Amino acid sequence: MKCPAYLIYDHCHKACIKTCENSTSLSVCKDYPTEGCFCPNGQVVFNESCVDEEVCTQCISEDGTHHQHMEIWIPSSEPCKICTCLDNREVNCTLQPCTTTKTVQCGPCEVPRLRRDLNQCCPVYECVCDLVSCDLPPVPDCEFGLQLALTNPGECRPNYTCACNREACGLVQRPFCPSHRELTVKKTECCDKYECTCSCSNSTVSCPLGYLSRSLTNDCGCISTTCIPDMVCVHNNIVYPIGKTWKNGCKECSCTSMRDDITGFQMMECHDKICNTFCSRGYKYIVQDGECCGRCQKTACEEQPFWSRGDADPRLYEVK
Image (cartoon, rainbow, N blue to C red; front, side, top):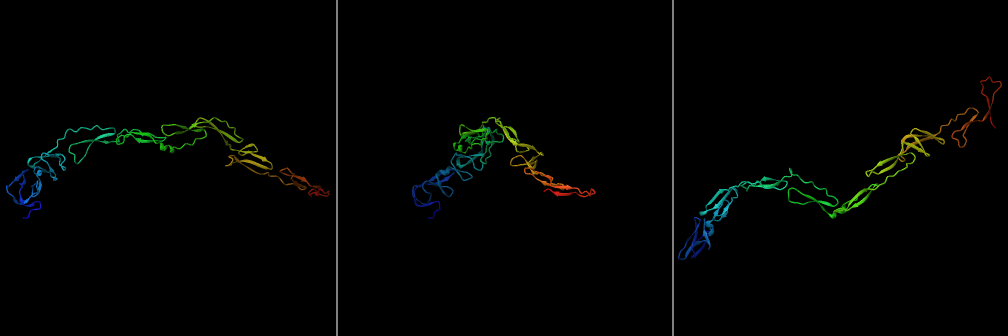
């Protein structure tokens, strides 16, 4: 005998033959062995297949899922329905009743919002962050080894604090202090704090010749006096204003409007003194030692001719 694929051939079957009809299991029993095609022990015939006996009372939903008798479920394609497996494998579906929607209590910087979900039927509110209208706390300015740390991770409104990081203390640089301040160390709750504290005293400076004194008051209230070159020329401990001329030995000098970038004073300009070297006949220009300009010294004698009419030059005789 050839049997369908879901049945097993038995030439001497003694058990009852069970089938599913009208959501119940029916048994046909004989008092003698029977040859034929049968389901395995413990299973029944259902829609040309062998299934467990409990399938006879189960309901099958649209997606092919088996549900027990009086089982309640929500269809995946219709979340607003509630279905129940009744007698005779009948499925009864009704709409879900929605209770009055209550507004949820949200925390700081949170606002309620209606949740949008494809598998959701009744309206449900949830709390979401709203940092636009939120009064955010100020972020502290951490220094001296303190680092910014969040005290409430996961919450919408952040709370920050400054936590100590000893490893960062080595990165704190010491400031450079000016002469009127000194470096001091102040102990803090984390790293040492370096400060430039005022340390100065008033001083009076006597400026040398040709310099002007200028007093400045610094941020500590101390007065410091400095000397700056005046717009003058200084020569041999004598101060000359711009345009002033003077004699320096055989030279004539003047104070110019040009400034010397090295000394800061005005530059002086000197040149040799101009001497008149012209002498009349019978005279010679002679320069004596230690003098800048010479003078005309007579070196010949004059003789006026007796016969001259007055227009002839006199005779000169060199001095012997």
